[in-house]
Image 1 (cartoon, rainbow, N blue to C red):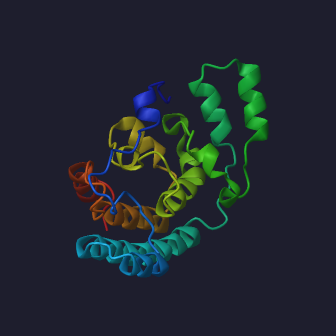
Image 2 (cartoon, rainbow, N blue to C red):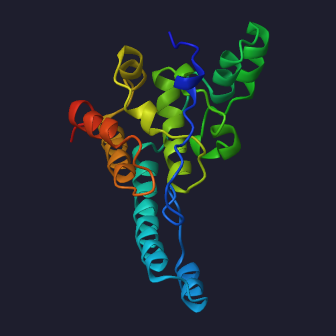
Length: 204
């Protein structure tokens, strides 16, 4: 049974030490051209170019996430609003009302503002399978306020149980996502934990 611990449910994203290479920063060629026109320092422009390359890589990975989780529905799993209500110690009646309002058919319809409130530790395995692709896509788009690294590298009994419903292709794309965020120079806080999880659980 998921435990009520706000630290485990919603991990804030660690602060970046770079002006350009913030976690999942998305940079366009037009922005780089404007930097050149305004006489930005070459170091800043190089960082922006690197960010542009990662933006293209993120777009490709988003496509693979969508393919791996295509057609996944919530079923009887814990919903997003239901999980938030559980985290808020809501009454059974309120929890049921939230459950009734939850998106259950198409994870791509989940709103980013609600994803940013997600109480991850209250998802069961089917809740994780439904919401994880939306969370990864939001992160790859630079829209997610929380860090998924802590959640995906938590290999205790609860964490492993939450990943139990993922298929082989779904596990593979989670591994790709972890490899991608591990190489993000703007977010190095969980790098050791990611390496361990890739070696011990999210194996090729």
